[in-house]
Amino acid sequence: LDQAFEDLYAGDLPQASKKGWEAANHMLKAVAQQRGWEYQNTAAYYRVAMKIVAETGEDQIRSWSAVASGLHQNFYENLASHLVIKGGLKNVRKLIDRLEQLLETE
Image 1 (cartoon, one colour):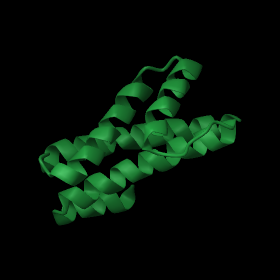
Image 2 (cartoon, helix red, strand yellow; image 1 turned 90 degrees about the vertical axis):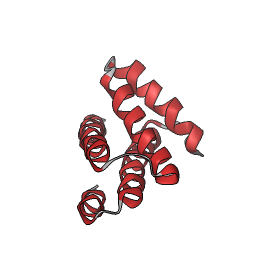
Image 3 (cartoon, rainbow, N blue to C red; image 1 turned 90 degrees about the horizontal axis):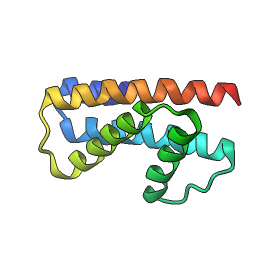
Image 4 (tube, helix red, strand yellow; image 1 turned 135 degrees about the vertical axis):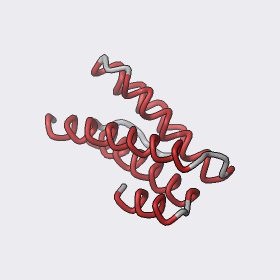
């Protein structure tokens, strides 16, 4: 995620978006693997995020994962502004921090 912020400040918004998405995707996959949940493709991203929300009761995980998904879309479309991507990356940081806590408790 640090590289995503570096890309953001360098003005490479698509790469910042891509790296933000990849960081979120990587952490969701780590939680899924720890719990023995299948994670074979991008569609699993949404299933795993919703399983974590159901497990924890923390709806903000859904919101943060949706923001990360928006960053993924922006990598392809490059429509979001610097400010939008910066906010998205901050939300991805919150998601990653929370998922790291879940990994530590298992």
